[in-house]
Length: 179
Image (cartoon, rainbow, N blue to C red; front, side, top):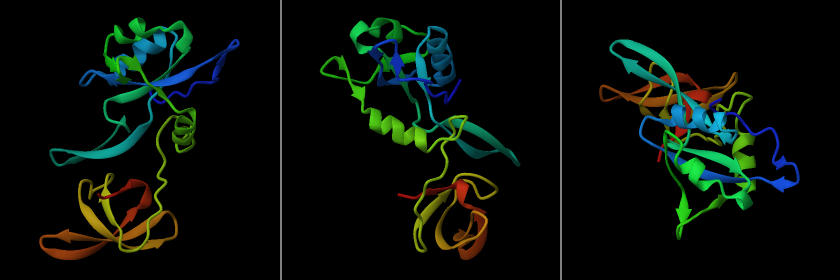
């Protein structure tokens, strides 16, 4: 359900448009489930990440766009009240009081970066010297500098460990560009 991609953009002869919605804090699962139950197509790209729980590393999933997801609707029928009043939904992203459609090309580009379960795949165009944040694995949360890309979807990073630059090999899939 989380990361489901609408199977079709056409409902009969009506064209569905995508709109961004904001979930209430910690309610993205509830909002997506309730909208799906009502028959709306929901697209919520997810990302894998690792967090520390005491001394353990725990792999989890979270929305790629924290607190936001996309809903496909026939704008002509204007089901805004049904969406806004859904348990877990805070609001629709609007401009001048009118829900703003999201460009279908943008939705298509995001979908193309997702796997079959709606999880974002890394699409980084990294090169040596780039700053990166490690999102997965034992070094999760650390920031480093990319030293070299190597075969088998791995990279050598230089990370600061106790004031000393240390070289570590990590999977590319767990890296995000550091800003």
